[in-house]
Image (cartoon, rainbow, N blue to C red; front, side, top):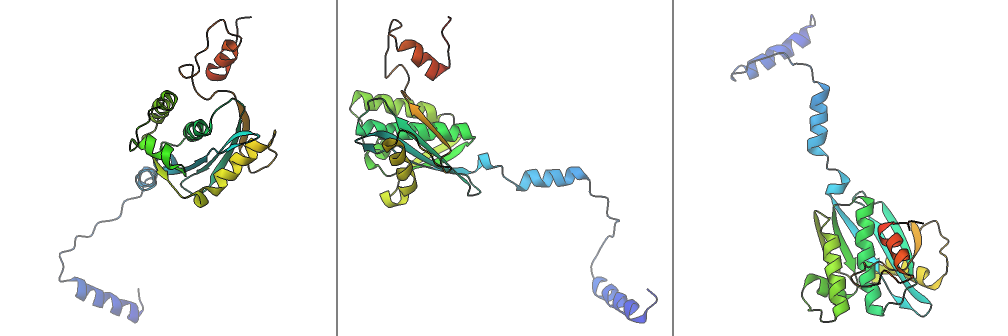
Length: 223
């Protein structure tokens, strides 16, 4: 402060700022809580952002498969391939794909999703643009809407087939091979029923009843 050039600059600043009514106060220490409040205010957690879910469910001669690609808000993706060994039609496997995509997104922790599918009929049925008349399709729609209620917000959009190539490839791999052996696939399983007993009614005396209770509700027999 003893240097003349420094004192000269301070005199200029005093002259320029003198026309303003400025009240100077010492700065208080910034507490850690202020930084925490700032982070909570400015940073959105991933689950509050929109997750993108691509699904596909083509039917092949060797079986049916479902492919799901989930892209998190930061851009990281998870892949899921499932083989369906139960007898379902080509239309039914498409609804199965939507159900599995919804369930996978819920399990991974997403609360807001946009589901992308290249099937116009399924997409428009879920949106309510087309009216589903088949009883099984109506039950699928009912179950999809029930599953989707667990999200804060969700929607489904139709995309061109060439934009859904990754999910389609996973579905075809799962359908054509008995086992999927690739590090890119997050999880592989064989699905017996992804629907509940309302769509596949089975009596308590049936040999399938105990299997369904375990698969759907994780209930073991008493013995």
